[in-house]
Figure 1 (cartoon, rainbow, N blue to C red):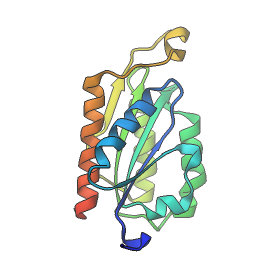
Figure 2: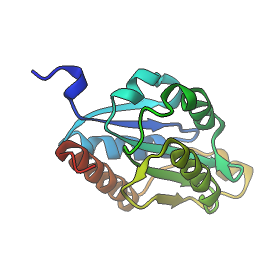
Figure 3: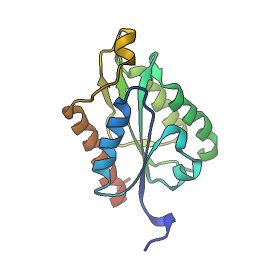
Figure 4: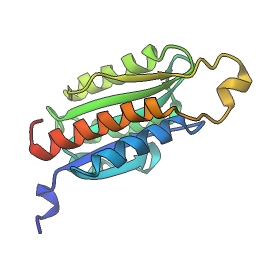
Length: 167
């Protein structure tokens, strides 16, 4: 058995208010587990040591008021400095559950990843739900099988690349 420091791992960090981001994170994790060890954790459950142990990252969150959700932002706020300078060059990808266009949340995530010197290895996925009324925004979401398949593809790609040491 390899010791923990040599096991290649994918860390999926997610936050969800209405179930969409959780469904998408779980779909990606399911596909990645065929290739690599996966930690799929809510944003508030991640410790810096888990980040340091990961070979690659997938960040999954909802758009909230045109940016990433507050709980996901809190994850980045509390983990930014403890891992700064220690994770450069590692692979990352993103999935956004968007009420409108999701680009604000995507830009915010990319700015943080740039600060960490992470390397984007898969194009972002933004799944739009066109939720524009309070009722639609707050409603539980059901992600389509087509979109879940896209999430599985990103999970498989990250898992395979990390397992092979490609990134």
